[in-house]
Image (cartoon, rainbow, N blue to C red; front, top):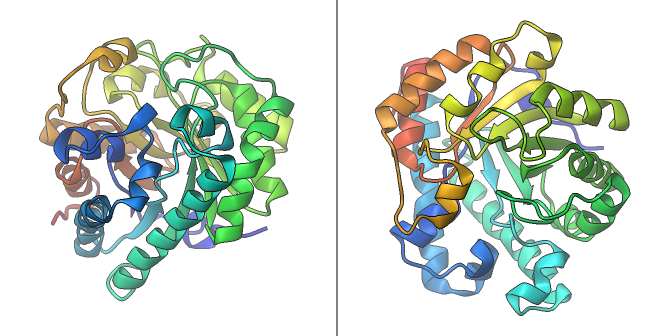
Length: 314
């Protein structure tokens, strides 16, 4: 299995990007059917906009002298999305490979200025990341996600990250799918305004269940798609599970998931406050390595986080 030694053996921060889908939809004006940015890979204008988007974050990493976790735009690129997107499964797997190739092009362009750059194969939940209509069991989840994970592995990603994962059984299945493909995994749970997963399970419970059922397979865990105010209290703990949190990708907005789902305009919050909140969170999380953003965030937010974490911003 590939290892994440460049990331796991250092205390140096890694940056990553922000709210990619919200940027492409609200700021660039591209249509995202089912909020699936993977379909943009066939549009030359969209590819140019995506390249400029990632270049801004990599510029921040170059200034801060950090590594970078470079996501593929495959959050809704699993085989189970093919019918809703009007694509065949084979075509979606082609787009998954194209997304990895696109990320590799970006890495090659920045490799002399930012190092290391890890290509992160992003996998989203089987259902709605805000309001899951059904929770698959671990075996079902592995079967659902294995085709995409296998395609991403074959294309050359360094790791698999499950983003906006809403429940522990799906996290377990996804971690097993990554292991079957010979890749390390990262599980990023989403939480509601009360700091609990959409299922009502607490973060420590979800992490403990996933670790117990996978032999501690995830390299680390993350929290994403929630404002820091929604989970800060949940992180006020000295328990060992806190050491398993290795990354944060928070929302810019304090709105709930239901409110964000209904929003017609982008709430990009306050980038300066966003950075300060992360500075405080870093003091609670001894193994925090990866800093980025989720819905509503962009390079301004990550710049502010970078300034508060290690005193440099682009």
